[in-house]
Length: 303
Image (cartoon, rainbow, N blue to C red; front, side):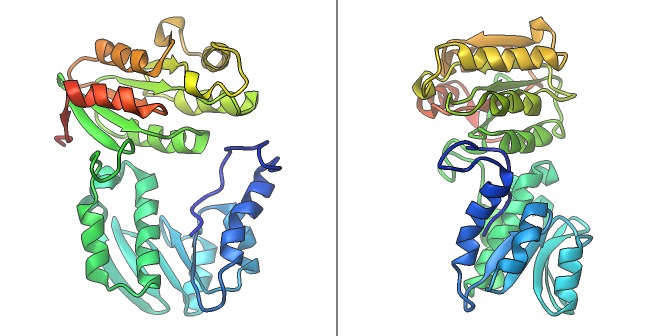
């Protein structure tokens, strides 16, 4: 399965731009023989453009059936999984099978976490390709939750003194855009984001992270130093780039903080919060920060 192509790790391993990154990711799909199955996202133009090179049968996933790739594929008898009327459905030629509602998938947060709707579609498509029946696939999607036991450090949910705390590992612009999209669609009095970046990204990629973070509905940003991931940068260099881009985007000085460590950022975020707020903590050095949130908060999310 190839879910998407986005700006990350450009300049590493000889990959200089999105076209090269897409070609690199598609090596996995091209390696699958005619007896296998390749699951691709029909809402990603780079993947659609490269689908003709795939030898194996393709199962498309999409948020709806409006994609020409999906329409043409199912009309020709192919398989696709997509969203219809807030339900995940499986279409094989003229046969349509309803799987489950978005609201039944805890990680989708009633559709606010659109990226996890795509992930659910992709996981279901892979399950069917492996020969699983509908029941164990839908049961798994209903049972998978954002707990530290199910998925440590990714999509973990806590309540701390009346504030909702979402801990995740999103560390590139596309991943952050997905999490911010979710955060701005969940109810909250105010919203805070903690971000940081490794030093081996180029300046434009680091600034891109700031652009993904500062959106309408975000009230405060804490920029953390990730000392474990300086990777050739001077201390303070990456946070300064992010803060500069936030100011260029119009973020007022009082909405920006810089901390010397991830744990300090977590503590500052909790100090800032009030009941009804939503904190999005994007943690890379997760051990200390996540342990602190678990110590002071209650795991789970009362929706």
